[in-house]
Image 1 (cartoon, rainbow, N blue to C red):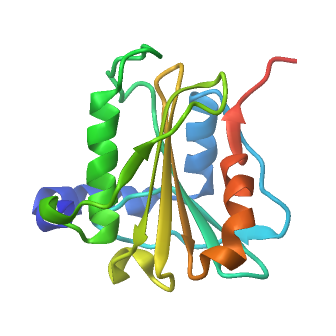
Image 2: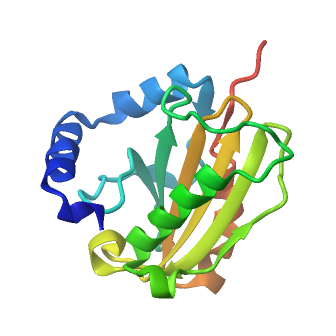
Amino acid sequence: MFGQNEFIKQKFDSIWATLNDTLFVQLLNENDLEFKMPNNFELTDVVKNYDVFYQYAIKHQKSDFEIRYFIQSADYNTINTSPIQRDNISFSLFTILTMNASGSNWSNVPEIKEIPISSFDFTWEAYSGFYTKPEFGKDFNYCEIYARRLKSSQMLYYFMMYNDYQAEKYLVEKALRTIKKKTNP
């Protein structure tokens, strides 16, 4: 979808040229977040893809499971942060991300579920699961995306890639605990 626009391709190419672990750490720090590498995971390469951008990826050392992260800075978001009102802008952006990762179109959008807020740190959460298109999925058949908006307006996206849900479902909860707000000592 976005990959069809030459301007966006050029923009992504310039971002990929500077993409490294330091950028992810910088985004975490700028947004007052911390990342903890889960046991049995290791860093893996970011797959260059024009439809779905992410900044960091880790994979499980013993199974077919990968987590891809995208942090959208609070400075970039100008969305309503009310915990009471439905967040239509975040929902719309999440829908577009889901369509791009799955290769769907408006007539076949994967189901998106807004989920009960799991923590006092979040004001909005949503989830979708679907078969991936090859360009994004690489070696994986299935993707679950979780979107979480923090009270400070940052958006966190977790792309969990795998082939066998029954074998990998225990890793999903582990993945969702990898990024959190920094706690003051």
